[in-house]
Amino acid sequence: MEKRTIKDVSEIKKTDEGVVIEVVDNTVKAEKVKEIVENCQTGKCDCMPEEVKQKVIFMDFKTDNGKVAIEIKGDLTEEEIKEAMSRSKKEL
Image 1 (tube, helix red, strand yellow):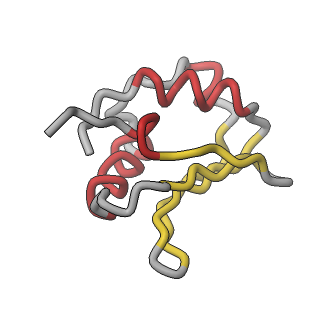
Image 2: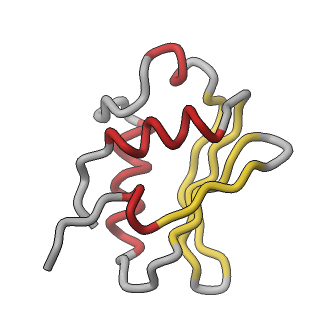
Image 3: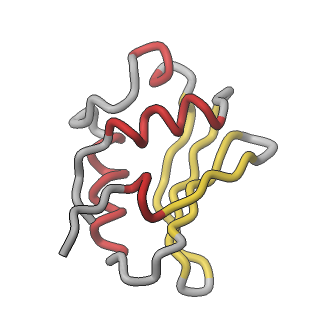
C-alpha cells in the first residue's frame, strides 16, 4: 500500500473562524487523524512554523456524520495550512 499523509486524503475549507480540514478518503482511520491533532496540540509536530502556530487559537478533531475532520480556529490562510499539511510525515 502506498504511503499517504493528511495532504493526500483531505481538502481544506475556509470558515469564518479559520479552516476545516475534511478527510475525503473514507478508508482513513479516525484514530490516525486524532493522533495528528494530539501531536499538534502538545507541540510534538514541526509541520507549522512558529509564526503560524501563534495564530492558532483552537484545534480539535471531530467527526460529523461519519466524516472525519480537523477544525482549526485562528487568523489562518488556506495556504498556510496547505504548507503545514505538505510537511506532515504521519502516515495514514
